[in-house]
Image (cartoon, rainbow, N blue to C red; front, side, top):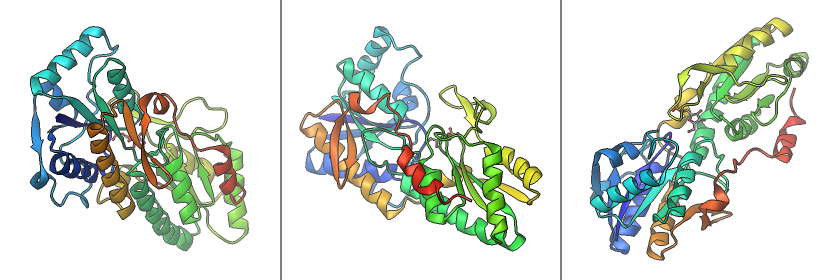
Length: 344
Ligand code: F6P
């Protein structure tokens, strides 16, 4: 059995550990040959890959990023056609591959599903710091991002308190506010603004003023995809991302002057950006990623193609792509209600 491993989309701490888990189980225990494509589909198209074996993955678990690289290069030029799938099959044959192990988030698992529907052997290893993938309780990378964001909150808190300022921290989360929710809860933020739950600027300012009236300084966490009530569009930066979507970012910079102007409280914004995606994964993410990789290799052995390795409680279980794709996992009302009562 010869398997091609390929990463797609933004990196997520734990990807190295996942590949290590898959290789230790797949090559050493199950006797597979495994190769890793460099920079995702880019390496697949260009024939650039490395053989994966025990020495190649030694010591990888604590390392952030992903050593074989990832990219947002697509597997085909949209829309997918029978010809593009034939071309992909032909490439796989030229590499001698029996199947693919795709490590990615929503977009990648959707691709996996299309490949599987076309009869191409694929197993999926879910990853995204955003934690917005259905079919799994948590994705590796999320815990690391939350830890970094929580630390940022703690640090912003001391400087904010010293100057009696309102501090606004922007974290990632294009369509779902999981990072903002968890980091904000852990750090005791006075409001968490999520893409799922628009709020008005009047409401946000009321929370900030309430905190001031209690003699304290407010700290607000905002997910990059948050929209003010009544506004249809998220705040965007110049240019498009790798999927051709507008680049998000800057919502904290938009909110801070509005808050300052309306409350009279000096307000500062911080955009955490890619700091939350970089560096060493937490122990939780290393363990989850390693187990996800192992489960992927086991699924290949037992012929459970067409599935993604999802975390359900304490177990990693194979979930059919059809159950995971096309359904964004957003923050549910009851999780927002848990924190909203304490806002302000
Ligand atoms: O991986 C998902 C994500 O973290 C989103 O929250 C964010 O909008 C995007 O990646 C940023 O992507 P890029 O690294 O391409 O700027």
